[in-house]
Length: 212
Image (cartoon, rainbow, N blue to C red; front, side):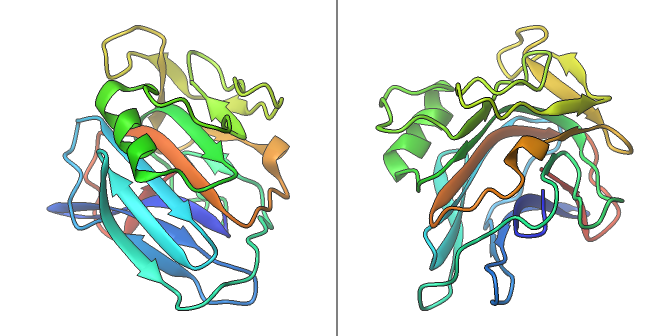
């Protein structure tokens, strides 16, 4: 998560509502809230997209919420360090759970691509453009996109992924573990998508308690 965009979980028992937020330069921050709750201790696929006017959130292959600014907005420009599993703007927020296959695209993913990613856990539609950054989280924080946007792991531990494969996802303790993405500082594009697999262990006690 960062100051300009991020995926968050609004955790107010008994609800766990994912939301995707964008904050264009010179504009107010707006959120796309999912109409469906996450289920605790289960894997979910979350995708956020932004086309300079409409912010959307997909969960498990289906569009679950959107917000339309009504007109084209300024470019997004990340002004602070990007983190996985920690909100840099509010450092008390950490993820208690697991993440896998985190991807950042410098374009808007199509609904067909998002549906494909959810149903088979990989592409059966070959995208025209590869991810700008891709973190398989297979025991490390390396970028597999070929662009060299490697992260730095701070405490997260390898764990099993959604298929039961060992050392194929990362576990975060909810209080201090995160991955630093300094390599993406200054990332600024007109359109983008954020995708990842998420599994939360705790419900939280109120407000937005975890993010990535």
